[in-house]
Length: 77
Image (tube, helix red, strand yellow):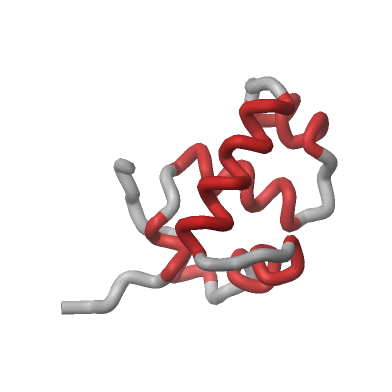
């Protein structure tokens, strides 16, 4: 059995938010691109940081930059 990468713990929406934020988008920009409010983006980011055990944006961006095969999995959380 393959060990799940930390990114695989994220829901599809959380991954969308994380990718946008890691790309340098603001809360408003991420919210606009995924069709939610900025408050919802902040909520997702809190959950993302908690799930990944990170405390800084740079840590999240680094995890998002992991090899593409780690990001191309179906996750239904």
